[in-house]
Image (cartoon, rainbow, N blue to C red):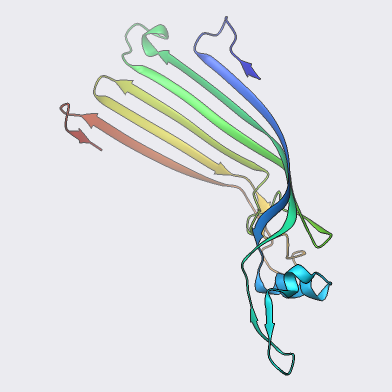
Length: 195
């Protein structure tokens, strides 16, 4: 769905809901996950383990397995607004474009060997992703001059879906983080730009 109201020219606001269910998804499992899934009775994972004559594990292939279901759902919000600064005040020159993208991940669940794991809201792991991620930009243009400010925010999250809680690792929960990037570019000639 895209909102672009007539009373607010230059403004657009797409909203996208997604709910994706992928069966037989490829994923990479750690060596310990391969051993654990084999011990739970999965022949697929046991095929990734090499044992010597004494039945001792000598090699564990930590490679991709076509062994899981991946379900992802969430909402993406985007908004952008561009305008000439003289529309705000006649004395101002140039234009300003403001844009933002926010992604809320509701669920990222993986199921392997009949064990389901939630990965949304975690910061490490193969399919992990924090619940919130945003990117906001402001771009000022005035002839040959362009100034950009980018704000990248990664929301708070827990360390890993395979580590159960703060008694296993400390700190277990991490606050959200912001990263700012300011850049300037100037078009000297048709062939030369300064950054």
